[in-house]
Length: 496
Image 1: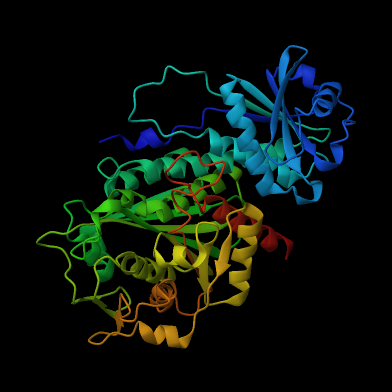
Image 2: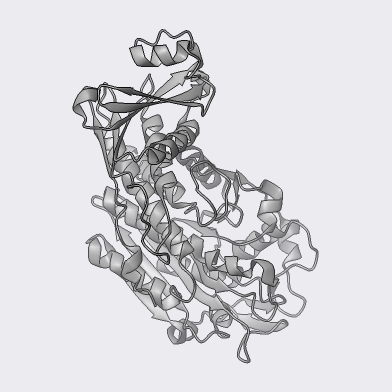
């Protein structure tokens, strides 16, 4: 088993901002953007203008041209129309530039912030570079390849040091979540994920972690959670993470993550062709763990309760069977009509537990249903909520962070579809429609009147075709969104 600490390595790239002249930065490669309104070859930069006049540099988005000037390389990146250029385009442009810089064996890359120098664009440039630079090669021989980028500089007339530091912290946390997701289930069973979370407490005075094993989970009355884990030789783990930022008020936000470290489907076995992808079924839990780590590094003045329900879902002689009835923490009985609808069983008990511990708002995040991808593809995660204002705040955080969510409806008729025939609820509605929504309706039952939002990331958590995600694998979706949501909540509390 790989030690949990193997995932806690810091991202090996220095990120900083500078207002120095480019010649004084020590960068071997400079990245400069070119907008459509600069296509006349009159940018004021001699080498760029020459490239434009020769037709080598073009403003078409993503087009690249390379030249040399005064001992360093110059990468000119087409940025398209100035009015269309925002954080997402900055992420994509940064990925394109990093790919070329890596081919040129760049050690220090300096991005000239495109005017008018908006902070959110600075954040996008850093995110796109660090996300594109990520590789998961722990199980491969050390590559004898060109040297990796060691330093990223952001150059502008304004000092963007604060934005650079914050973006580096959050994106590093996202890449660590990708590490967790990409680690195979044999090296990251629930107990290893639990140990990993405990390391957070050792690194941050503002974080404390308490964990409960499978026997304790059952003794606590979490019959739905325990049922999912009972088919595996690996003990389930309830990971409770408490963050109390400096100057935080009394109210508390709860983040609940699904942490199924491997999901075979149980007795309702999944098709074998894609079962290897089910190591990714813990990425909601990874997002919660790493978002809280980022909040601690940022020192955000907020109280957050993190709960991660970690288990393996396996078939065996002790596994829960289709047709079994389990009793959840709040006493609700649930028919397990499909053992592959296990995430909602784990989350049901975790949500009830969050209410018991006291919280003012709840967000759960989970790779819950393939149906959400049929509805929204890989661009948006689905969000369902019992409170319009809270849903709106989650959507706004998604917009600002670039991790987009789209609200799907809840309705009494959908809730009726998850009523059980022999128990109060069923974990799979008989009618095969609105399946992402009916899964959320089951969770809805366990949150009561607490403002709650459920984020289904099943289609955004891995193998997403974006220029800044290289190849296949985990995306770490949700880390940036959860951090932004908490920061906005803390800011609103301090203002009012």
